[in-house]
Amino acid sequence: MDPMNIISYNVRGLGRGVKWPTIRRMVNEHRIDMLCLQETKKESINKAMCQALWGKSDFSWEAYPAANSAGGTLCVWNETSFKVESRVVGAGFILLSGKWGQESHLIHVVNIYSSCNLHEKRVLWDSVAQLKNQNPGGYWCILGDFNNIKMSSERMGSSQRGLVDGSIAEFNNWIEELEVEEAPWVGKRFTWFRPNGRAKSKLDRFLVSPEWLAKWPTSAQSVLARNFSDHCPVLLRSKNADWGPKPFRLLDCWLSDKSFHKVVTESWSSNSQSGWGGYVLKEKIKALKKKIKV
View 1 (cartoon, rainbow, N blue to C red):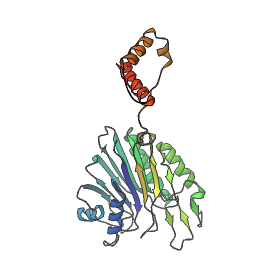
View 2: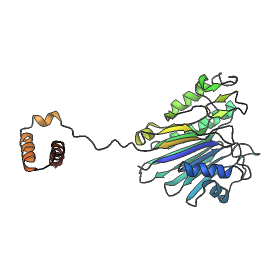
View 3: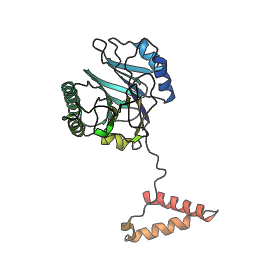
View 4: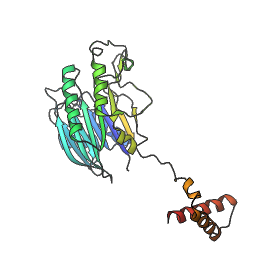
């Protein structure tokens, strides 16, 4: 299956174009297949703006508008690689479902921007849980700015008020209910920094299903360098693991089969090879493997 690179980034407003070249360079540098932005603060987004962010013409996009210049989410993706079959857009989320490359299973990607308000978080969490229940199966990736931490160690230098009273527990329960888990982290962990540097939190992350990790076992997320936002971009790289050729395996039951010894003897004697011993042995085993498969 083809690799997939996704960036999640709370941009704290897309502005009038000053930030766009920085995002475009990031897309090109990391060979991004899908760009998921939060807090665009844009009440309207058009194709020209998305192309300026993406830098190429082979893209599709979906957006949820900001309200009174607050919030807003945007997804831009490589339409050649990701064939989107359905879209669900709501307050604080965008769900894209489709086929990736030659894969026959559905890929579900959810871009989330969560409010700091606990009641509004609960509404968002319920909406996403319902969507997942309505679309069982496939590979799930839920990403974005959750504005929540999973444990107290994910926040340093700022007050825990508003988070300790059930918010952490509820967030973890929601993750468990969705049957997803954090993709493994590489490098730094904190994704949000107060401008004066005295506080930092881990608010942004990628949550993936076991099926996703089984398909892309080397999936890993990493925090990229912070630039114009108080949030850092987070990059998820998903690719297949290349474990090399499968080893030759001898099953015990073959040894009790009287015909097995004959097959081995005939294959070994009929395969004449010249060269150094290791090469001859490898070629004879390869020939035997083909014979056994037949």
